[in-house]
Image (tube, rainbow, N blue to C red; front, side):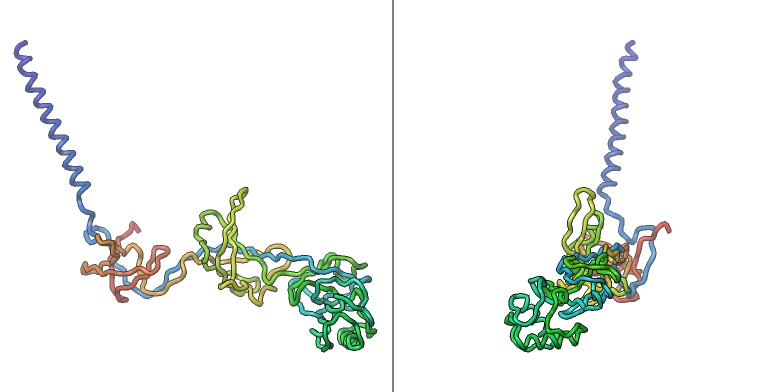
Length: 358
């Protein structure tokens, strides 16, 4: 029993010693691992070289732009009879005196004015509607007098000249159904095709003329993640129905709380009209979906290298490494899709790039 008690302290001492050795080894490994400096790019076993060369870097996504007009009711038909011809197409831009359609072969023309046509206008008539008619006669070049709202001899003469020029019976009196007054001209118009169609009968009072704004509204429906790629000012290139390209920029974003869809409004560069003089290409009815390219990173030309060739020094500066191991400080001007445009080196320089498994 005495021998066993005498051996126990030595066993304890031995176990403690082994434990201390294990703990010391673990601590030493941790210190060496954590405090060891990062591997130098040149000491990485797998690498290759690429040549700095001229190229371009940019990025885009393809989405649909929705173009839709917002017609506004603007004028009513006052003629009675059978529609014998339709003279304008949806979206046509019209000026004072333009013939919209004919009823019983008699033209129905458009003019600017706040007062709708409500009576025949002839000798002795006076009022705001007469003033509007006088402005129409002046716009088509047959009246040089004042728009005083009174039908005197000069106005009657001008009416007859206009009637002869436009294909009306020459009577000196403008019938109530001859003119449709709309708030402003020139403007784009569309007619109610269910009412104003060849062979249809009209009786007067039908709301048939709708005016259009200078441009349809252009929007891009996107997801939340796509919206983050389209901040205000993002360039959008829209393919028109006839194959032209219209430039636009992203503007205000609105979110539908129910669907979660984000709608990005588009405007023309510098606030101009996106479709310019070609807005007639957009159908007046319904929505037109136009293929579009969203420029998420504008294309930049210059000296291009893979972004993997770029290293960051301890002082935070970017550089590339050549075959001799020399570091060359560079400035990155654009990056997209794993490539970067840089300044600071010459074309033809071979630079170090970590090799991939491929």
